[in-house]
Length: 432
Ligand code: PMP
Picture 1 (spheres, rainbow, N blue to C red):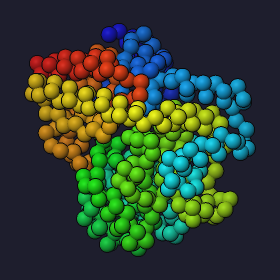
Picture 2 (cartoon, protein in one colour):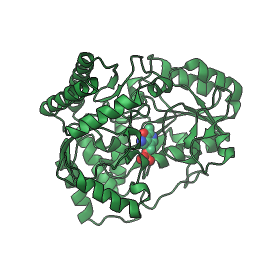
Picture 3 (tube, rainbow, N blue to C red):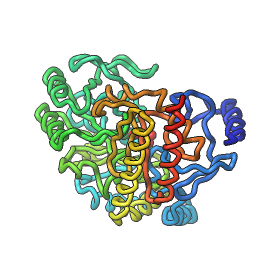
């Protein structure tokens, strides 16, 4: 496969854009380096690079493209928004309609605010929780990603009583000192942390189904309820980061799948239909602490912009037909089974965590329920799979910690072609 034009574009990019990428996860650093593939256009379940190579797309832009590229309903909405003038800086009907649609789908969103990214949504829920509780500390879970606000870039300490260490330069020690990290799927670790810090904790923040050390669901049906109960017993609020999970597995939140009710939600990705978006919301009396009604400040020039609202409404209108989720689940199951069979034939240690159309292929024989297990997945084998698939026209995220996303645009032919590429790739890996 000739990718010369990607290399040339990347060389040009490096001279003007830091590192040649606008988000570090786009670099191929975790899969052996070299230049990333530069894409030119997308259609349905495929995208085409600047050399004209065609790929089946499982990246889905890291999640938002649940309806694939250039879905006609979404494109029509975007065109209409553009023709009406892109931005007003005033209230508009589309933001009201979209908020109503979200609250109908997720009744716990009694009040909503739109922002522009998942990072902003999470950052603001934290400020709200601190404003409401008048406490500073936060508890998050090891390996979860919640965007790049200062507090959310604090990594794990080594035990429930330890305080966080920054995972990035430029984060004040005072910020890190307020963040406590515990392992996911380990209720006693959370219990211990709350025992020590409980009366200082403003919020416990969690991805209800983790998407950031691969796809990891709660091990028990009652885990999330226990997280909520423990947090509330300490007077802390519970924030669900549903930036990946909202509308991913069904028409609604992941919280609903477990019958639980967090105090606040952060959302993004899918709800924008491919345009920049974030949203946060939750219980009315909590949300009423936000300006202009309350003392917690949050604002945004682009917040609720009509283009994002209209593409979001269009994207969800496609998902409203719940049969699309059955289909993504069926195609996801077919991929899972085929990949496992190919792995077995090649003698490769593969474990797959799949929820509906989203799954992660780990190179380990161990069950993956915590970050430590995902970390143990073999990065060299992952890189070999990534390269083998890329060369055969299948594009997955360039990191062992990401997921494959099946969209409503994928079909059986895509799955069969993908499985043939997986079989060839695994056989090639076996012979090396
Ligand atoms: N929360 C989660 C769970 C995410 O996966 C991400 C992005 N991968 C974010 C927050 C941040 O969203 P954004 O990149 O839109 O700022």
